[in-house]
Amino acid sequence: MESGTVETIAAVPPGGSNDKGLEEQKKMTREDWRKKKELEEQRKLGNAPAEVDEEGKDINPHIPQYISSVPWYIDPSKRPTLKHQRPQPEKQEQFTPFGDWYKRGVQENAIATKYRKGACENCGSMTHKRKDCLERPRKVGAKFTGTNIAPDDHMQPLLEFDYDGKRDRWNGYNPEEHMKIVEEYAKVDLAKRTLKAQKLQEELASGKLTEQVSSPRHQWGEEEPNSQTERDHNSEDEDEDKYADDIDMPGQNFDSKRRITVRNLRIREDIAKYLRNLDPNSAYYDPKTRAMRENPYANAGKNPDEVSYAGDNFVRYTGDTISMAQTQLFAWEAYEKGSEVHLQADPTKLELLYKSFKVKKEDFKEQQKESILEKYGGQEHLDAPPPELLLAQTEDYVEYSRHGTVIKGQEKAIACSKYEEDVTINNHTCIWGSYWKEGKWGYKCCHSFVKYSYCTGEAGKEIANADQDLPEVELQEEEYLTKPKTLMEIHLEKQKEEEEKKKKKKKKKHKKSQSSDSDSEEKKKHEKLKKALNAEEARLLQVKEILHLDERKRPYNSMYETREPTEEEVEAYQMKRQRPDDPMASFLGQ
Image (cartoon, rainbow, N blue to C red; front, side, top):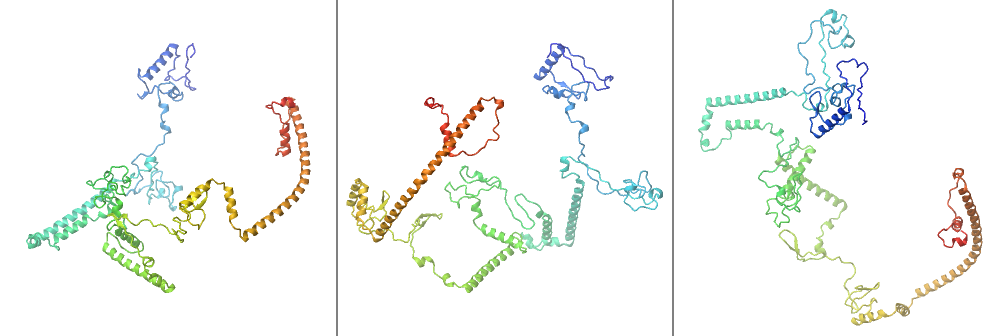
C-alpha cells in the first residue's frame, strides 16, 4: 500500500451521473482504510458482528473480495450484498408446478349459440382462425349466419416438468376415483348382508331353524352336513377367499401358471442358523439367501439324526424331497407340452400321470432294447454271469462303522503287471534290480552286477567291496578280454577300420588343395587390409583439418554414407586408434 491516501474510483455507467438516488463514495483517508481493515480482521476472528445485506442475511467475512465485490452494472452504490452471486430469477427456467395435469374429457353443454368476436369466420370456433379451419368451407360462414356454430377444440395445456416431475408416477392421479371403487364394494357387501338377514328371517318364519336346533344330532354336538347354515358359512368363506389368490403373502411367491412356495422368512421361535455354532470355521452362512448348506454341528461330533438342524443339504436330500422335486419337474415339463396338471391344484392327477409316464418309459426302453438285439444280436453277452463269478470268488473282509465309513479292510490293491514278479533264481534271495550302485543294477543279496549269476552271499559282498580299490581301466580291459567276440562284432570292426583308412586318404587330398587356396586368400586379405589402412589414415587427416577450422565454416555430414564396416576396416581402425591409457604410447609416437 502506498504512503499516500488510497483512492477508490467508483465506475459510473454513462448517463448515470445525474441520478440523485445513487450516493457517490467519498475518498477514503489512510486512517479510514486502516479502520476498515481492522474491522474485517475482527469479523474474521468473530469479535465483531458480520456484515448484513439488504435482505437481512449475514455475509461470511471469509469470502474473498473478488467474490463479495458488487459489479457496477448490478449496484453502482456498492452496498454490501451477495445477490449477484445467487441465481438470477430472470435466467431461471420455469417449470410446471406439481398437481397440474392434462385436461380429461370435454365440458358438456358448452356449445355457443351466437357468433363471438375473434372466432373462426367459417365454423365459429374460438380456438382457430379461418385459414386454420379444418371443416368444409361453408357457402355462407358462421360469422354471417350465426347458426350451426362448431364447438371449441379441446386444447391440452403445454406442461413442462422438471426432472422429478417427469418421473412422478402418481402425477395426475385422482384419489376420488379409488373412493368410487371402495363405495361400490361397500354397496355389494351391504347387499349380501341384507340378503343373508332376509334368508334367516324366512327360515325362522318357516320353522326350519327350530327343527335343526331341536334335532338329536345337534344336541350331541354333531353337525348336519347338508344344513342350510353350513352352506351359508361355506358361501361366506368363499366370498372372503375370493381374492386370496391375487395377494402375495409374505414368504411366498405366486405365479399364475404354477405356484411355488419359497419360505424365506423364519418363525420367531426358531434359532437363527448363524447362532447354532459360533465357531468361525464351521459351516458357511450366506446372509443374502439365508442359506447354510453344510452341517453346523459337523465338527462337534454330533450325529445328524440327533440334531434338530443339520444344514439345508440334509433337508434337501432326505425323505420325499427328491421325489417331490422330480414330480414338480415332471409337472413343469408336462405343462409346457400342453397337459393341464399342477402339483398343488391336483396332486392326485399328477401322481397318476407320473406313474403311467414311468411305466410307459420303461416299456419303451425294453422295446428299444429288444429291437436292437433282434437287429444286431448279442444276447449271449448280456446273459453272462457277473465278472466276480467268472474271474474268481473273493472273500475280502470289510468292516464298516455306524455312519457307513470303512474301518478295516478294503485296502488299495497293488497294480500287477503281465510279467512274473518276486521270482528268485540261482540261490538268490533278492530279485535282479534290488541293488544299484554307480549306474549299474544288481542283486542286493550278494552285490553282484552280473545277471543270471549264482549267489555268493556275504562272501560276494566282501569281494565286491575289496574290488572297489582297483583301477577301473584294468577292470574294463579284463572284462573286454574275458568276453568272447561274436562273428557280427568282428565283421563290424573290420568295416570301421576300412572306413577310417578311406577317411585318412580323403583328408590328405583335401589338405593339399586347401594349402594352395589358403595362400591366395591370405594375399587378398593382406591387400584389403593395406587399402583399409590407407583409407583410415586419410580419414584421420580429414578429421584433424575439420577440427582446426572455425565452427561456422565446418561442413555438414548430410551426405555421409551409413553402412556396416567390413572386417578389414574394423581391423584398420583398431590398429590406428589412439590409446591414451597405454603407457608405451609416447614411445610408439601415438
